[in-house]
Amino acid sequence: MTEQTSAEQTSIQAAADRAEDQPLEDRGSNRSQRPTSPAFREFIAANWGPRPDGLPERMDSADSAAQHRMDIGGQFAGERLVIPAGQLVVRSNDTDYRFRPHSAFAHLTGLGTDQMPDAVLVLDPIRDGEQAAGGSEASETASHTPTLYFRPRAERDTEEFYADSRYGELWVGVRPSLEEVEAATGITCAHIGGFPDAVAKDAGQVTVRVVPQADEAVTAVVRKAQREAGVTTTEEQDALLVERLSELRLLKDPWEVAEMRKAIAATHAGFDHMIRSLPRATEHPRGERVIEGAFAAVSREEGNGLGYETIAASGNNANTLHWINNDGEVRPGDLVLIDAGVEVDSLYTADITRTIPVDGTFTEPQRKVYQAVLDAADASFELAQAIRADGTRPLFRELHEAAMEVLAHRLADWGMLPVSAEESLSPEGQYHRRWMVHGTSHHLGIDVHDCAQARRDMYLDAELKPGMVFTIEPGLYFRADDLAVPAELRGMAVRIEDDILVTSEGAERLSADIPRTAADVEAWVQGLLAG
Image (cartoon, rainbow, N blue to C red; front, side, top):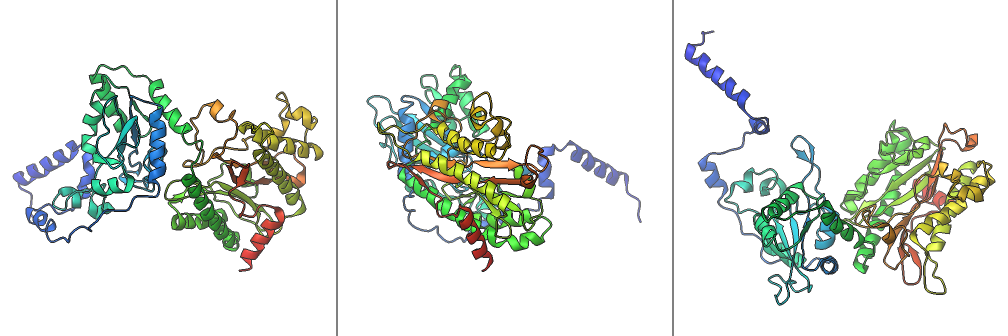
């Protein structure tokens, strides 16, 4: 081995010094072996076939989204509204989660799935005497002109085409052009690079509201424009937009209801697949994962994915309300509580819970608890269907009260309450809530807990109206270590959840095709397991 010269040693030391000085954020490129030669750049830019001719058809969501834009614009006349799609979210290091746009963005554009990270919808106010400018639907509303800002596909002679792992065509696929998205959505489209100037335009004279939680970078651009215009902003200003966007989803239109039906049908298929997986689940040390995986497969085949993390809780695990570890055994003779929903490509999701006997037959104690929960659910649904003689309907919160009435009396009959059912149902009592601490219903739609920022008088204290979609999901939860529960019921949990649509005639159980009575559930499980 030859000795290193002084010059070689100096060179090595200089390289080491440079490595130490390299910023951490630049070190991800240290593994890179991407080609950079001029010859490569010239070669990769040439000899590509033409892009497909023509433009896509208008999306079936476009009319619904246009009406949503009209509705929200009418509440903020003369103001500029900024609704971001959101950014890609880092899972770990340089890998991202699959993108899902902010729900308000999807609701107002009709764009679902994993499209359009970093896009921004801007609703610009139309002043008196002005004409709406540009776009096939620029005159859709008397109050605002919509513009969708996003990053269209790059040309093949650009570095982005082959070198950008986040946006490049060779890395993530072909991005649409401005013209293609405009044809599909009916919204005027522009390059995202023009967004800062658009939001800063007249920022001193026009109130600008942004959905602040959706994309911090977009919010920063809005704040910069406001500061430079000498405008003082408050959190309440943006909170009002978030509130109204949430309330906009309280009533679903016919297209949205059709999407809910698709989601529920796909979820039914997922439940069938989970039941078929039960024999394998009972043989696996983490049988709950077998059930979870069975549903996940259907959710991707039939929809965009899961509407929320699946709960596949066997035995005593079901007494943990949001049990998503799903790492327990599945034992014959136990109940397995499955709470799952498919999110379809439009991002509308189902939310269904069924409690299933692993071997296809309820024991008598299981059947007793199951029937109590079913009776509570039926009482709540019966109330949802009611229309009084004067045309008024129940309040949303009364759905919960109807279910609690049934459960309190059933628990009293079983000798589990220290007081009468009536005393327990009083505001000062609530003893029965030991075994059901959650509410009975929540709105459902593009979010599993939809309309969450709505005002109380628009949600909990609101009268039921046609177009509302919500769950009814009472349950009873008897933990294994709960000494206030009879021994034969300990370690058992039952929840039954259905998705409900309020109609002009009353209410419809959208998930009625998914078996729910004890006898029907037994026949369902036994039939699928028999092959």
